[in-house]
Every structure is written in C-alpha cells, then in structure tokens.
Image (cartoon, rainbow, N blue to C red; front, top):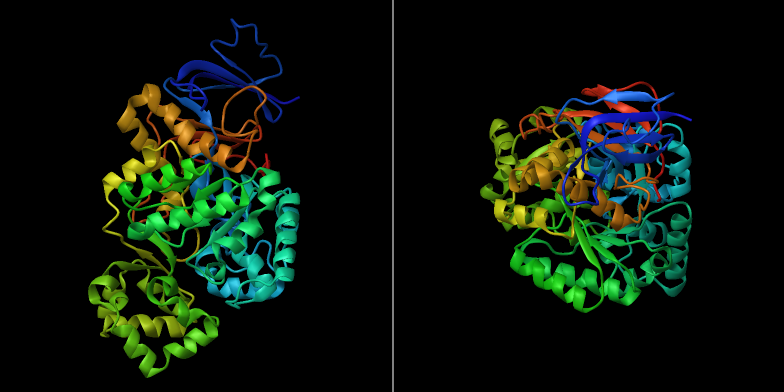
Length: 520
C-alpha cells in the first residue's frame, strides 16, 4: 500500500466553516485520515512518504473546472498545464453542446471546422463515442476528465443542420445516444443554444432528450439562449426544461444583471427545479468570431455556404450596415485564434488589425472570415458586465468555478490560465484567510462535485478520493494577463491526483499518469 502524509499545514476540507491545523494521510488513492498531529494521534508513519509542508501552507481538495474546452489537449498530452498550475485536478468537457466526443464521422468533420477555434479539430475526423474517448485517454491522463454528452452533437448525428423538430424516430434514437453516453460514464448533457445545430432544439425537444438524466441523477447543462439583458428569458427556458424532464439544471458561464438573475432563481425554486451555474471572473468572453459577428440564419446551411455568402456584395453591404460592424463594436473584439497567414494579428482588436492593414474594419473582418473559412476565435469585451456583477456571481451559493478555458490559437483568453487563481484571491480578500480558504474549497471544488454527481471528489474527508492541491504560504497568484494570457499561476506547491503527486513546486512531477475518466 502506498502511503503519503502531508504534515504541518492547514486544511480547508470543503465541508467545514474554517481552516484547521491538521495533517492528512493518503493511502493508495484515498484520503485515509485527517487530524491534528498524526504522531500524537497514533497514526503510524512507517512505510510512509512524509511531505513536510511550509508553515502557512493550506491543503484543499483538488479543484474541479466545471466548464472547460480541454478535450483536445487532454487527448493529445493528457493534461492542461495552465489548469494544473492552478490546482485543477478534474476538468469537465463536452461543453456547449458542440463536442466531437459522441460524434459520428460527419459530425466530427463539421464540428472540427465550425467549432475548431474553441475545441480544436479532431484529427483525423472520425466517429468517437464517449466510450471511445475514454478508451483513447485511458492510461494517458495526468488530470481527471469528466465528460458531458452534447445535445447539438447528437442532433447533428441524426439530422445534420436541419432546422425542423426531430421526428419521433429521431428523438428516440437521440435518447438512445444519451443513454449510451451515460452508460459509458458521461456526467450530464450539455447544450449551446447560440450555436448550430444546438439552437434548433426547442425546450420541449431538449426536455425529451434529457429525460434519461433523471434516472442517472445527472444535470442538464446549458449555454443559454440569452445572457446579459436577455438572461431572464434564458434562465426561464432552462427552468422549463428542468421542469418538463424532472431534472437538475445548470447554467454555463452565467452573466447578466443580478436583478434579472435572482428572480429567475426564485422562480426555479418555486417550480421545484434545482438550478446552479458556473462563471469565470472576467468581463471579456471568448468564442468563434462568426457567432459574434454574423446572424444565425446566415450560418444555417453550414460553413461553406456562409463563406460563399460573405463574398456576395449585397450580403456584405447588409452586414456592414448592422450594429455588429460599427467601428466601436469591432474595437471591442480581440483576435485569439487565427490561421497561420494572419497569426501576426493575434491579440489585436479587429479595428487595430484593420488599421495596420490600411483597410476599413468591417471589410477587413469579412475578408478574414472568408480567407480563414470561418476558422477564427475572438474575445469580446462586455462593458455591461461590471465588477460588481462578477463579485455577486462569485459569492452566490449556487456558483461553481468554471474557467471556460479555451486552449486553441496564438492568443488565448487568460481565463484558462488564471480563473481559479483570480477567484481564490477574491475569496481571500473578501472573507480573510480563516473562512476564505473554505470558500475557495467549496466554490472551486465541492460545488462542482455536487453539480455533476462526482460523489467521491470535492471534499477532503476520509474515504474520498485523494485529489488534492496545496497552496503555499504566499498564496496563489494569477500571472496570466490579456497581453500575456498563457503565463502560469504561481503558488501551488503540490497537486495530487488519485493519490499520486503530479505537480511539485511549480512544475510537473514525474511521469505518472494517474488521471481517470471521472464519473463519481
């Protein structure tokens, strides 16, 4: 039996109200004991690897990223360094209803092009079930990965980009695919109602598709149809799905005015629908540029049709006259993921890039979309999302930390490298160390474990899986910025995944691959 003792630190277990001075014993993959002074408590340390922690170090449950676009880096390398450096031991992927996990070959080809700037392309594009992804990463993971089935992916498998409601036989087969995914270890069902073809599913159709979640005890997780000023209607639709299907629901990367959100929470409670959410602590968002600039109807027939339409002078004139193509709007859009021929513009706003190219910003943006085949990712500054709104969201009892990290392109959003460090700093500044570390443990680990039914993770209690991070005495420090978005966070001295040390003193430790598909 492998035994490891973390000695001399403080423990924030995700269950109590304050940190306590305690040692923590790991046996194989599980937390075996936690308490003050293992020696005096009679806990034997023979045949035990003792790690003496610096005074002031804090031991917490390994963080769980409730919303990450990490299926490709996990498949390619087995870990996400930007997340690992922040203490993240589990990432939940299959988000926004658009993952190539669960895709047919045709759907994988479509999503690799349409959603490539977010999830990366599956190469070669092929059919890949949840079970197939599990097998592909087995024995290769440093971190754990939990997988959601994707509603838009399943819809495309059966109906392509058809806008009509699914026929009864299609809906039955779609439910079968959800059930197959759950049987293979999926922890819920996601949708992305801004994206295609996910947005073609009405609430009633999605509720029928989501019914298998009830028996499995898993949530429906949605990128809503409305955020910001439309957040109340987006949450109302989410609640309607939960009520019709009899399931828990979860809103992805929620934002909007508290005056629009809290009444929707109250309405969900009144309807008997448990509703939670995740969010990252940044004003700027990130997604595919086509979604930010082009009306959905221009994209209904697929990327190639859209590119052809963007060459039409009449279509271009109509777009350039719209609100999305004003100089101010384009000045709030920053380029993140670009083809090699345009990579020198990464990090610039569209207005800045167009000025450098001696071209009008709107014309330059349309030319970029055509030349790239729509394969562009961008970040949108949202002035309406205030620091006060972000603090309200982060402090809410329904909140889980979700970075929405995207690990594609030359200039990614810093949230994938700094969201957990930034949130940790917020809770410590707001609540102080005594209770702040327990808030970190709850918001960055325990809440997400509860949302996704990861019952063995998220808290440092004997019998739970030993997913652990240790924050050193100087705290965890966010280093990623908009100018240097991929800088790793500082301050995490140890990360332990399923009982094995994978990060020590600012760098990966050893060659172990203890990560798993996390379904409990």
